[in-house]
Length: 186
Image 1 (tube, rainbow, N blue to C red):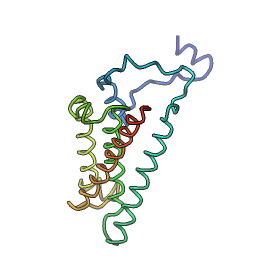
Image 2 (cartoon, rainbow, N blue to C red; image 1 turned 180 degrees about the vertical axis):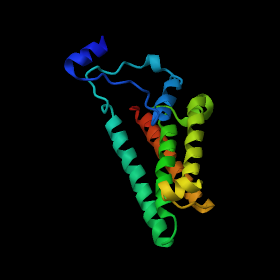
Image 3 (cartoon, rainbow, N blue to C red; image 1 turned 120 degrees about the horizontal axis):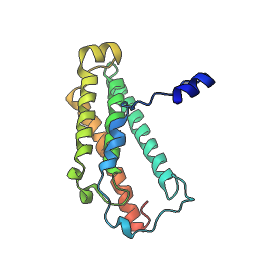
C-alpha cells in the first residue's frame, strides 16, 4: 500500500530507524521512579506551555551557568597554561557538567539525597557509559589525535572538570531548596 502510493506520487516513504545518537540520555528518565506525593499534586493546566511554571527560567539559568563556567574555566586555564589542553578541558567540562545537571534535575522538588543516587540504575549505567566514552575520546590515540584533535588531561584537569560538575549539582540542589522554602517548586 505504501509503495503503491509512493509510485503514484513519486515520494518514497521514510524508513523508520531508531536514533542511537542520543538514545541513552532520553531513555534514563523513562525508568525514573515517581516522586513522592505526585498523585496529591494538582494537575498541570492543559493550556500551560512546556516553559511555564518556572521551567523556562530553569532552562535559561542552567544553560547560562554551564556556558559561563565552561568559558571561564577554559579561559583561566589557558591564561595560566598557554600550551595546555584548554580546549579538551572545555570539551570535557561541557560533557561532565551536563551529566551532573541531569543528576540534579531528576526531581523538580526533591533533593538528590532524598531521591537516592541508586534509585535509577539505568541512569547510573548511562552516566558510567558517558564517562567511559569521554575518557576514550580524550585518550584513544587515533580518535583523540586525528578525529577530535584533543590533548590528554592530567589529574589536575580532571579535578577541575569534576569540580565544575559538582558546582552544577550544588546549584541545582540550592535552587530546589530555595523553591521548597518558598513553596513554589516547579
